[in-house]
Length: 344
Picture: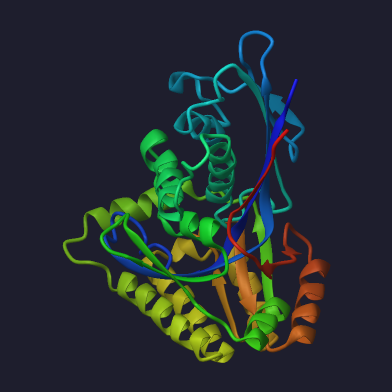
């Protein structure tokens, strides 16, 4: 029996200036985001079947192994994985498939982990297909976004899928939704190294804000005019991109704070109590900037940009000494989707 093994991984997303403008209700937007490690990893093993082909999924972080349903009506708590397998046609004909998934990113961190998982799984399954028929980056983004919005009917912006595919530092223009034009923001090496040394990702606990997000969306749907906060979010992304291209980290930090204020203006519940406690500590440490990652709400995570490596280390020491769910997650800028295949 011969076995084909495909390994893939995709970065998670942090520091997303302009988030909420990459959605259908904003219609057009501008986002800056960073693709970072820790990554989401997928290994797919395919081998000829001795009987009826079978698919098994192993979620290493949770110690769970399950058989995905082929029927959308029976998709359950792992619907994202089942829908992605469905989108990619399940398993190759007459082959058994084992899918192993894991990540060092904490669950519910509002760092686009679902999109990263979806992109990594699509990339791996795509590599099992016919040689020469690989999806383009744009097709990967559309396929992963479609899994969430079309197959599962979820609310989803498009920035997370773009970041998972491309990694690095991105400026994304959305016009009209869901069309996304991505431009890499080229950083000087010293700026890239400074970001790696000065950027904190602080986990606040599992993200539980679906009801709040539905409330925000419902409110926006009934606006006769676009809320000024959406324009402020686009402006935060624009000024953040200009600052990064100029190597101005203080300017980028100011754009982070501008984004946080605009997010709060969109709905005060998007900057939760836990986030405000950490932001107070960041301000006391004279950090350059801070923002909630993702859509916001209670739980999730936030990004803090510090003056130097030493102030980041001291800030994270203070965070670790506090009671509660808060903890720093080490991050570094990372490349986008990586897929390798081992043939017999």
